[in-house]
Figure 1 (cartoon, rainbow, N blue to C red):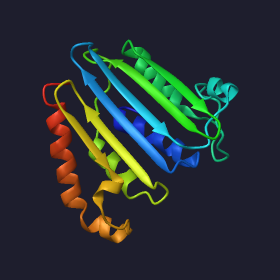
Figure 2 (figure 1 turned 45 degrees about the vertical axis):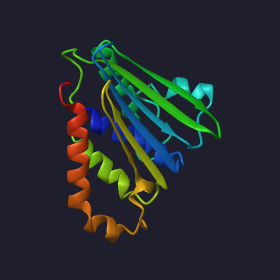
Figure 3 (figure 1 turned 120 degrees about the vertical axis):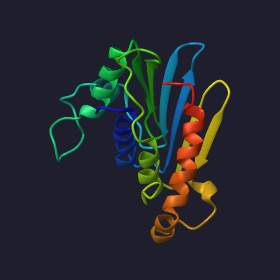
Figure 4 (figure 1 turned 90 degrees about the horizontal axis):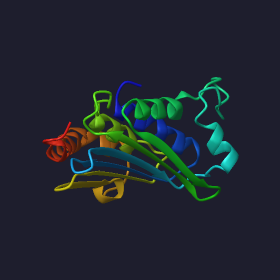
Length: 181
């Protein structure tokens, strides 16, 4: 993964495979603490302590299609290279929280990538009942919820308003990103 949006999407897809119906992505930027923090929270099946230890091993996966599970391991490596870290907390039957921290102005902190496409992909995903996205800095906050669209989640209807949704997301995210990396 070469940017944050791809890494976030990979972790969210793990959440979907873990039977999550509600997924929240929170990105916080702080010039005061020089931190970029990403939280991905789901209500999936969760993991026991042993599985939490294993998921950061790139050669461990619960999938049957491929023999490696690089998403979390790569995300952790990206964070470590930018003086950050990755933490996982989970409870069986409750869900999982992945928190990744980066030094905001570190040369190795990856670019955001295409957050708007990432959000749209998750918005049209029929396996998620609720997707919440928060983008926050010290002065501004953007909040987006799939349920706030206030319409039936017919895929055709959502695709028909794609341009309007994408433009709204871009303007709102760019507003929060302004003045940050």
